[in-house]
Image (tube, rainbow, N blue to C red; front, side):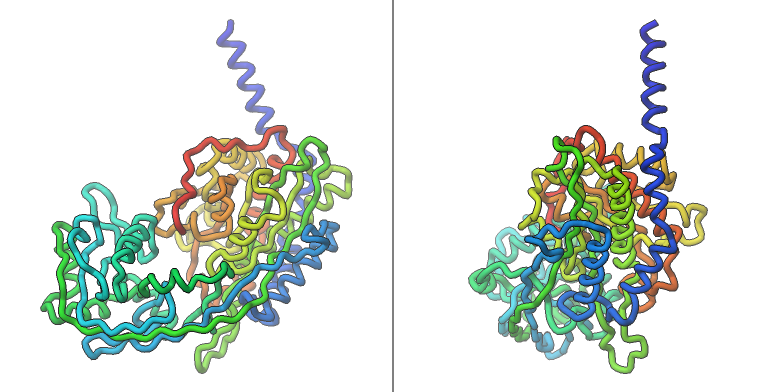
Length: 526
């Protein structure tokens, strides 16, 4: 009898959880392909010049978003303004040709400069340290030398090796260990970076210089930090040439045995920089909650409105990186979601908790806008119950082209990283309303692509705020000139935005906030 009673109760609870809320459906249906197209056709137009942070196009986009927030009746929460100033500095770096044993290599063609500025390197020895494991670094004296390091995870039996050029937390620890020995220069070699650099052919996609948050005087730190270059195989081969070995040969040997060795090679490079202040803003629209007991808690919908700007390659006919998918689609998504919530509030059905719509600047420059917001929150992060981040929801990713689910999927990243509650809420919202395939392939902090660390949600997660990152995956036009409005699948964009809306509707109206009950996977370095 007890088993039957429990079973009946369980069925009742499940049925209740899966029943659609007519009020949620009414307002979710306000998110339409036609309205999305209206917004995106403006934001991703040539007139907005690719929305590069610190440039005219990004300012135009910020003004457009703020005007929409005002039109929808959202509050301006930054002392009466929709704009949160994000203090940035532009570090314009000049890197001379890297000359190794008389052979010259160029920035953004043969290597990518990362790390300290203002350095003059004239070295006569290259120290090859293999994969940089403690065993390989043991007993070495790297002071004043050029260090050549394999920027890949060392192969382990029974475990797929991460060979991406993107730094993992473990590799950053290796770099730190190398830096502690005060080398002159670090060459982080990865043959896969060649395909990326081929797209730029010597032109820095960051334009005039690298942007960063102003954090006071870091001259002392730079004085003790060696420049770091991510280099291609040919650069590594040039450094190793006097040894009679190629990079590929030493890499193969290092996979199974310690291969640290000194090579008599010359390396010369000069790095200089200048700094200027840059104007940039996050755009915030706020809807206060209706429940006196819950209104101090805040749900965030976020998307970055910046992209990578203008095409400066000589002879180019297409001058604008329009960024329709990245992340015009996500920005459009939060505008549509804001419209749905605003209409609900006008109809007396507003959310119990407060909702913040956050348009971040500087994502393409290193998640700068979201980093600044989470370090200087307008609303306490202790009261922030979740961040639903939308970055690229308008296209079919390369892994779904031609597949049956191509028009009915989304990658869900991070929902289960900090809160099992949030994961269940996201799944229930999808099962109840949108019924898309939720693909969790990239829901892993150890994913070689490191998508969990590569959009604005990460800066909330590092403060233990539960997050979901909605993403369609990369495609052939990712950060390319072909990321145009004409290639956007607007019904799919609207459906993915509806999923975020329905998930947010539940979060904003349920009695309890999602509990943070998972091991903190967000402490890694992006």
